[in-house]
Image 1 (cartoon, one colour):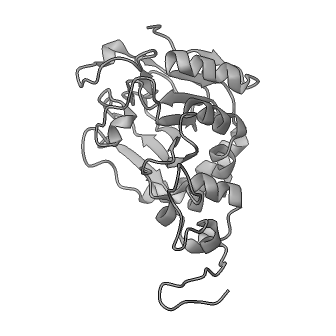
Image 2 (cartoon, one colour; image 1 turned 120 degrees about the vertical axis):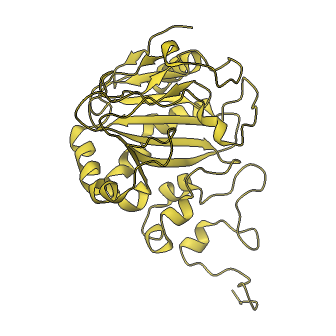
Image 3 (cartoon, one colour; image 1 turned 90 degrees about the horizontal axis):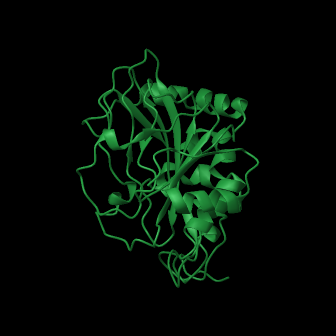
Length: 280
């Protein structure tokens, strides 16, 4: 396996990005987001980050804050959540599923003095199910909200590790840092071994973790409650569908009488209420 994280320019095509992702299970697209957009997201999320408690164990980080619900809390984040290049690449990686959905949104703020995270695979969240080597179920991104350096805890990865056996025995010595500038985007699959780095600087390292998964699996972040109904009804259809307000696979996700879940958000009355029949 190659022991470096490849960098591509923001002009790279979805085909080019997917080819590297398929080979290495990780890559960086430099300067993909406008710094102004990153700053708006940081400003919108600042009070929520401040109110978020630090992690309760070593894995989540005792000096790390993980703040979610970005769809509801940060309108500026919608641009990155729906970034056309990223969604295109996610669809290519997860092409064996009929459709994909938003899996989680989370600002990860690693504070000074934080230790490195245990090397792991994100797809272990699905109860450690051993998916086939050639079947990807997650496409993940971390957008740099500050510069990522080895000193301040840049995410560490084992590029090319996607087909190695499942084990808890990999160490930081086997990883390399995903160093990148503010506004750059790290893409990685649910199979690649990785972990947050140790922050030995005197500043917080902030990244925006936005991930997508196949729509027949449960989402890590419950999008329907993270963005309550009064917020959901203000969102455009394409974002709602990405959040999971869609039917998928053969017959998953419909409501009541096999209706599109968007109808509930839009207040379209069905043939049956939860109580008595309702005439159309």
